[in-house]
Image 1: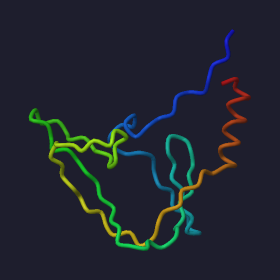
Image 2: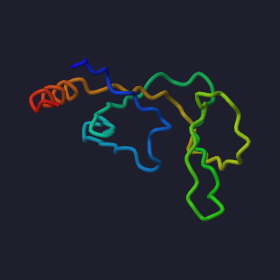
Image 3: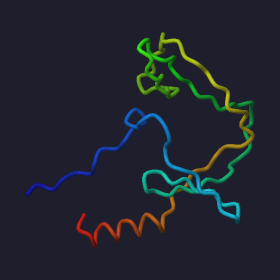
Length: 118
């Protein structure tokens, strides 16, 4: 049969609202983000050269009482939104965050999937 291409990549719009993975904090100080079975190591990066803050935006609840949706800043369309938003200041950034995939766990996962015929 015809060879299948790679699976489509997920985007932020594809992610469900709510918890996305969990942070694992080890006694050594190492921090790992477990996201849908993938491990990503988090490390402190370079200091910020200017004032930066982390914020979250949420649309107000729907008129029918539904929960408002989280909104990503800088949507791919680049169009400004006229929808009113709630802005939550989460704090000032002192350093950037470096996110690195855990390559050994990725290789183990690939080997297990090949062995299982996935």
